[in-house]
Image (cartoon, rainbow, N blue to C red; front, side, top):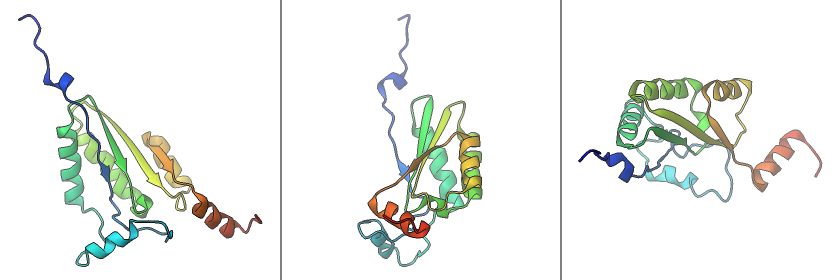
Length: 149
């Protein structure tokens, strides 16, 4: 047989949303189903991803992907409650375990903690930022800015 087929062409990628801040959030939206999740883990009130778990997750997630590109989706609670140092560590570990693969990151945030430093971090590292804006968030922002409706 002249051509040996790679198993990669038969395997589809799978996607996982990582929640590095757990259920922690700086808002208390009345519709949010996720805030109650903190009650499930009374022994670990912070519910944040440890460095050991982060490294294991990144290493194993990359290794489990069959393709040449790996997409990470960072979700919350509110993801920006984790520091930029945490996400710098994410990038460091992704580079360590990438093994030549393209790594893409997206992050979902309510945007209330975004500032110039966060925006610069995301720009420099090519992250896709998903800003969640809904009526409650818009009302919150309008109240903060004291803009009449």
